Amino acid sequence: MATKQSLQAAVRARTGSGRLNQMRREGWLPSVIYGRGTENQNLKVHSKTFSEMLTKSSSQNILVNLDVEGAGTRLAFLQAVHRDPLSGKPLHADFLAIDENTPITAHIPAHLTGEAIGVKAGGLLEQYIHAIEITCLPNDLPDTLSFDVSHLDVGASLHISDVTFPAGIRTTHAPHVVIAHLGKQGAGTDDAAAATPAGKP
Image (cartoon, rainbow, N blue to C red; front, side, top):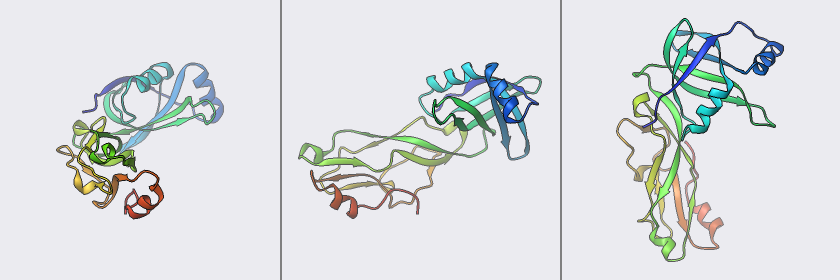
């Protein structure tokens, strides 16, 4: 399950691109927290600490105990990180205020495990979905999802309906959606046309 990170924050009053850029030069990352039952609140967190948190995390789905100066600690989900299109440096962070009984939606990295029978026979394994959209409670949030493909032979597919998700986790994808397909070498186009496209209905 995902580990909760701790992050200190302070309320900010400054708005406008000029003032926000000045804040960034001072080492702060402009942020906002919002959510059901709470008013939007403009915050700022230390840029270096925030970047270190992203680097150390094994997933982009991060639960944060956000310690807001003068307002106590709030559980939040890192909803979005807005980055500079050229440097990739974080420019702004969005936090969703939640509690342990609030379901959240997240895209979890999907990993294939095992050596498929069809690969041993010369087939080609193609993964169509690399992140699975799920809903779950914060304490059930996984870092990754792993799916065993060792049973797949040439021409077979692994569908959403073929896998069992951990307790408390529900996917938003339709049962027929293909996670991976094992085709013949050199026949990728035909196999792709025969397989169900990835995605939600």
